[in-house]
Length: 532
Image 1 (cartoon, rainbow, N blue to C red):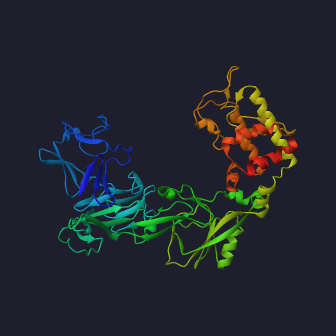
Image 2 (cartoon, helix red, strand yellow):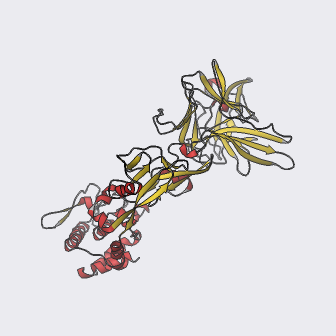
Image 3 (tube, rainbow, N blue to C red):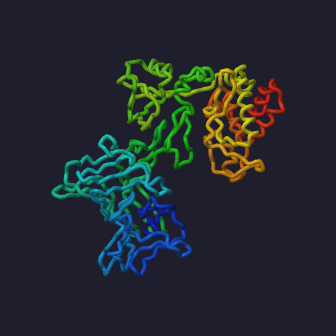
């Protein structure tokens, strides 16, 4: 039923096998062709496919044996326990060092914890911990918390008792025992004994979503080798109750105790939309400062989207008022610092960034209003038809271009052209400042190799291609500054409203600007960029 490979123990389920134990889960991944060897000195060693030792003897992290207890033999038991012996005496066993799972016949003793995995396929330590505390309480926390009572999202509420271990029997009973304490069963286990030609394996796992779940795996040998998995018990009926199951500005919904899904609020998008990284949360693409600025109000309008039955577990409102439902929505809409408002029986609560620990809970009567941004019709016309440039702004562009040209002629690569490093005097003469990252070129040099330097967002792609860089990297940076000036917004704002230029071509475009007269500058930018 179980398989030991390299640093893991697997339960041989179908269609996919299940990891139930991992040695040093936060170490770098191993080659699938690595082998584990019990040396003649009695140490357990890991060898690469080329026979090279990959690690020092296990024992560095209280895992496996020390030099004083060198093993003479090893056994893999049907229970899933991997045991090392010295002269028929147990010197180490995997059951003493659980990672995210305990199996039938295994226990979690006081002072030890289960750590969830990152995902079903990534077995490094994840975001949740189930701790068997010395006070007799079994408690689940977000891992990156202070582990205080306010941080917990589930417990057995057995504090100030003498319970000192959590146990899982081979028949699937999950219970706590302790000195002078009656046995406390956590799951009302009612499963029937295994039938003929069947074997049932139980495991209790702190899953990647933070829910502590008891599973049964039934193996049928006749008429064919089949396996099936059932959920026997779960600490949380609603797995979204695990604090931090979804990231900022998102909410959680679920279908089963083993499955929870993250969703962005309306107007937001995932920071990373790959399946395993949606837990990082969502972003709305603009800041409070932009929402409150006059330019933000000029180019964008704001609206509210209503979501019913949303529970906010970590509620920290900056304003609480007794308002009607419609007034609650409008109050947030008119307040540029408000990201969302919660309307419930106890009033209207306004919230700032970020919104955390939100979940769908159909048993509550509450409405969350989320603010989102939409382009004004006028701004869309600006993007599609023309770019209006004030006279002073055009003077700024030409002044900066002239200063960058002088730097290029002096054979200095500035490497950090950005708005913060451009100064103007009273006559609107531009001066480039902060040459701390600059790179001078000798007269016979056309380019140079150097490490990446500059500010993110203003870097030319050649920095990351291990190629020669020249004064053209400053042309690229100037191009980004030029876009910001023409579009009246920062680089991030350009991406938000749909201007997503091909940055590889930016240097080429800006070099061509010199071929145009000043009066054609606006139409050139319009044709080559905004319509692209």
